[in-house]
Image (cartoon, rainbow, N blue to C red; front, side):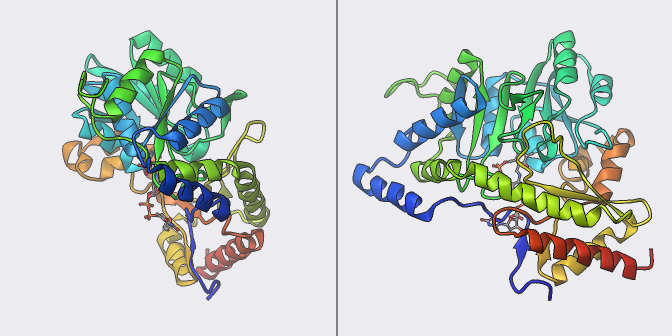
Amino acid sequence: MLFPEPLHVGCPNMGSENEFQLLVTGLFDTKWLSNSGRFVQQLEHQIADYLGVRHCVSICNGTVALEIAIRALGLTGEVIVPSYTFIATAHALNWQGVKPVFADINEKTHNIDPESVRSLINPKTSGIIGVHIWGEPSPIRELEEIASENGLKLLFDAGHAFGNTYKGRMIGGFGEAEVLSFHATKFFNTFEGGAVVTNDDELAERVKLMRNFGFNGLDRVVSPGTNGKMTEVCAAMGLVNFDSLDSFVSRNKSNYVAYDEVFSSCKMLNLLEFDTQEERNYQYIVVELNPQAVRHRDRLIDDLHSENVRARKYFWPGCHMMEPYQSLFPDAYRHLPNTSKVAERVIVLPTGTSVESSDCRRIGEFMISRLMSYGI
Ligand code: T4K
């Protein structure tokens, strides 16, 4: 066994335990646990400042943040979204009665392909959701152009991209709004959590109303809404983790470099690159098997699991192959060739603060030796 304990993709990064306990002890004094308390407000200000946006509206998780953003933007009919994403992006639309229409991706970057988006626009289309997959920004300029030429709303699912930049500007301020996820497995977590960030004052007000049942004052309800509030204990975790952001990035980066060193000598595996001219959180280690090795992907993952390396095949097989979408759109695969190819060849490997560079080297060397043993 390579490791005595499992190494997970998405093992949480956690800041100072003492600092967290101090904040939680404070909650026993104040007895203010939810509904936009002190910690929530502080976290929202810190995140808005950090991202350089006017508004950060915290939400209980990234999926509900997407649902609220979709409602607050008034998206209806059809919305174009990549199929190659976590199922929450598509489900958030479906849950709001909006039809997700799946666009293909660029085979190299794994991000949504603007030409595929153009080909799917019709009179029922009300918007586009770009996903900054693995934290690499979507083709933002191209999507902005398409949205403005066609009168469409543009929303970004920035669940992977906290702290990353596009042309030197922080992700968070693009499109009508961007949605963040602070799930336990994300590079920055609040246990569960998320946010809608935007520079649009009116949109931010609608999102705030909708996350609190539509209440505007003690007994006055002025809009439909849900319960999307973040708790104080989650915000406390966020404040503590926020202080450790730099150390989280630096560990992710050194792990990335360690994997890169091992894989650079192997033609069967390709480590997805990040743009080194921009800020990156390096939270996902994404490896692709080349065409000769791809048929061994599942076997290699099984072998990794037997050694306590819990590698994942995100986001296989693509949202269009999951229910209810496979039944609703059985022919969608016809215009998603790159999605299918990429979903077949990706392996995501452990990183984060519970993984050392030496672990990454051992994992990489193990993968290469296994592939060689398959006789490729
Ligand atoms: N948009 C995008 C692009 C997303 O990737 C996501 C979520 C969302 C929207 C929705 O945001 P949230 O509503 O989740 O805030 C995980 C996460 O649950 C999910 O947040 C994430 N994306 C997705 C990419 O990964 P699973 O189904 O892989 O979770 P699970 O339970 O298998 O956990 C992953 C690994 O993490 C496991 O190997 C164990 C480890 N783990 C997990 C938890 C919860 C820990 O070590 N400790 C923990 O506390 O979805």
